[in-house]
Image (cartoon, rainbow, N blue to C red; front, side, top):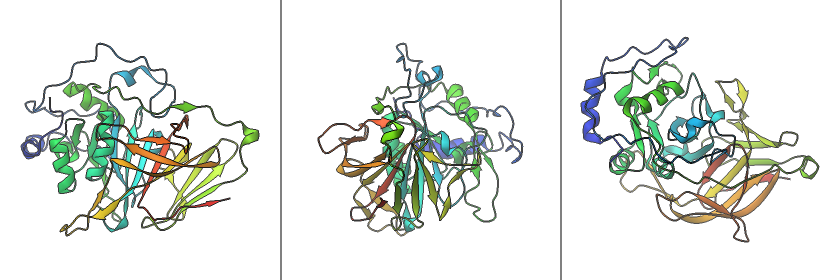
Length: 352
C-alpha cells in the first residue's frame, strides 16, 4: 500500500484545496484546525494497530511516553536555519545538515508534541526523506528538490504532508520581510488532525535507541565545549552545563532559542557523524548528494565526555545505529539527540 501522495496527484489536490480555508491570524491562530473538504483518497488508510506496543518510554528520546504515542506516527518536519524556529525543543532527534551553498537545514523528529506554532516549514531534500524513513513518520514539508520529490513519490515508508497542497488548511503564512521564503507555519493539533482525518495510524514499530541514567554529578567534568566552525555557513557551538547535564546550543554566534518558549535550546546528547557528500553532477543549483546508508566515524558527546565510535545503517529501512570502539551499541541519556552531519575531513574542536 502506498502511503505517499504521488507527484501527479499533488497538482490535482492543489487545485481542489485552493481557498478551502483562511490562514489564521499570525497573532491568534485558531484553537482547532479548519479542516478542508478532502478530495477522493489516493491511498487506503491504515487501520488502527490491533497489537500496539506498550511503551513506557518514547523509543528515540527515552522520555516517559503518553498513550497517543502508540496510535500516531512520529512527526518529521523540515525547518530552515536562516530563520528563528518554533518548537525545536520538543524534538526527540534533530539532524543538522548542509544543503546547497553550505546553508544547513534541520530535520526535526517529534515523538510527542504539543505546540501552538511550529516552523517555519521548508522544502525537502532526499537525504532528509531517507533519515525519516525508518520511523514511518508523517513527513511535513513545503515542496522540495526534484530528487526529494521523486523520493517521496516512490517511497512507501512515510506519510507525506505537502504544504503546497494544504496551505490555508493545515498551514498558514506569517510573512517576514527579512526572509520572505521562511513564512509557512503549522501547529501540532493541525498535524494530528490531518492524521485523524485521513485515518493515518502508526504502521512502523521502530525500536529507537537504548538509554541509560545520567552520570552522577560528582563524576561529571566541570566544562566541555564542542565547536563546529567551518562545516556550515555559520559556526555551531555546544557548551556543557554540569548541573543539569545538558549542552547549551549556540549558532550564528549567539544562543539558539526556541521562540515557542523563548529559552535557549538544551541538548542531552550531541552526535557528530562523518558522511560522504558531493555535489550532484549537472545540478545547476549545486545541490548535494549525501550518503545515508553505510558506516563511518562518529563522535558521541554526553555527560560532558566524548566517545569516538562508528555509525552504521544497513539500508533505507534500517535505523541509524551508533557503536563504541568495543562494538557495543551506545546508550544515550534520556532526552533529545542532535545529530550534526559533517563531511569526512571537516573538523570538530572540543575543549578541554
